[in-house]
Image (cartoon, rainbow, N blue to C red; front, side, top):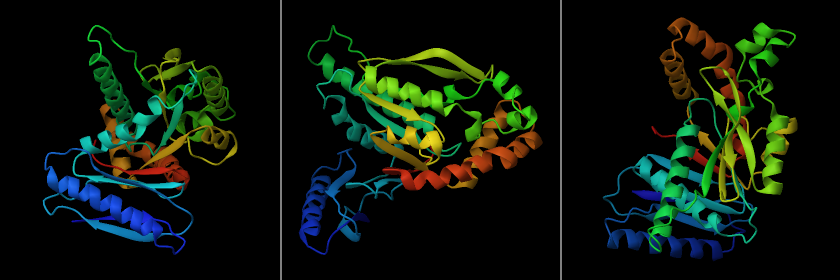
Length: 314
């Protein structure tokens, strides 16, 4: 099996030599320890153009199920592995330095995680946060087993910024507003922007969640506090370039996008609709008249991501 790394160069050989040395070193480490669980990872400063770099990996490695890549910012990171656990572990390892990099008690490393409905945003964000907190807890308990350290990471869902049903009722065409609930204009992005700015300034903020049973936000249900150093904000439209959404996107330290085939995502959403009691024909209408339209818009924002995560079956 061969891993392909994308890296930029100005035709000088320095980047190639640096990448080749790092990649070969990690490949040797993999050969020397067949039980190592850290996936192959490489970071290289990059100017503007691309060249392919490659390194041979041990022949007994399984075919990759995922790839995390960044190809638009100052560094390129490609991570490959054969299990979803490796994906989670790789993202945790990537975020770990952000837990203690700043002496500012209000500092937060904000990740904006976007992707279409059914891509697995909630699953991925909660799993990464859970593992990051567990790792930090184990680290602290190795020094003092009597101390239960606070969580260092938290998920901040965009769902809590849905407009209330009463607000949809007050629109010019309430029937359409309810039918298109989940479209960008059925959210309150200005309120989300204000929450994120307050978090940046004060280091803590109360955030609404969303009660799917009731169909409305739940005010002040999530507290992002000073101890939380990594905050994963997950939602459909966080990387859009229009109006307030663009301001929201500018506040993130890093932007992630889960890339998935739309047909696969829509099948997941269809199953979700049916599991909540919608008749199959109504669920299919909901997909075609709302969810698919939203997904197609969201996919256009993939180009604004720093890291693209190829969807796997979480």
